[in-house]
Amino acid sequence: MSIFHNVETTPEKEIFPNWFGRMIHGEKMTIAYYRASAGSPFPRHSHPHEQVSNILEGELEITIGDETRICKAGDVAVIPSNTVHYGQALTDVRVIDVFSPVREEYR
Amino acid sequence: MSIFHNVETTPEKEIFPNWFGRMIHGEKMTIAYYRASAGSPFPRHSHPHEQVSNILEGELEITIGDETRICKAGDVAVIPSNTVHYGQALTDVRVIDVFSPVREEYR
Image (cartoon, rainbow over all chains, first blue to last red; front, side, top):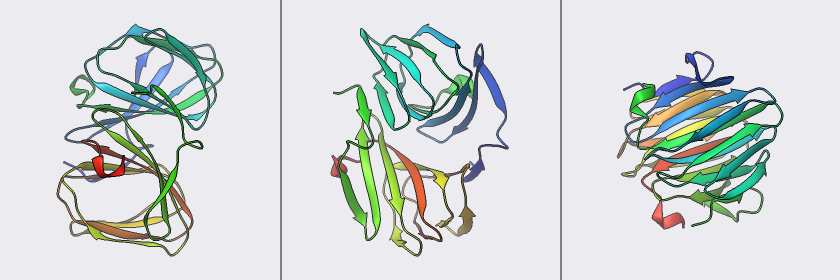
């Protein structure tokens, strides 16, 4: 497995409409560098992987379970396994999502 | 366990001399927001946790096993379990390190 990576040279995938991610995988974690444009929603979904969303830029409205927040740079959302979440980019956003275990379907 | 966190309101700990981290823990992962000033080394060490270092700002010289690189914004280093690593901040740096499993000693 490669040790050193660069986000810009990692292929970008459109995971949800207008949500573009660059994925780097380890043995236990996937790191996803996301960008989305203002007004782009992401749908209700859940997965067995724990997810931690690190907001770098912009404003992201996110609902986790029954709790909704508008997250900005410096906000961090910890999404437990199998917990429904959804939301929308209120502005252009940049987010680093980390998952454990690895999102094998994104390799 | 809390879902929503903010980096600025998370207590800062000096993990190595001049390496300051703010830690957010989930069930499977620890997210560490680090800052260090130019010239600050971090010592040779290893741990059973996989680590992924996401460089946000500055230049970080890092050696993993027998490979050395100078990492900049957008560079990502995947450090396997139990692999010796060390390095130094060549400029002021900001890095997000993610670990799995949780760094229980940092709770």
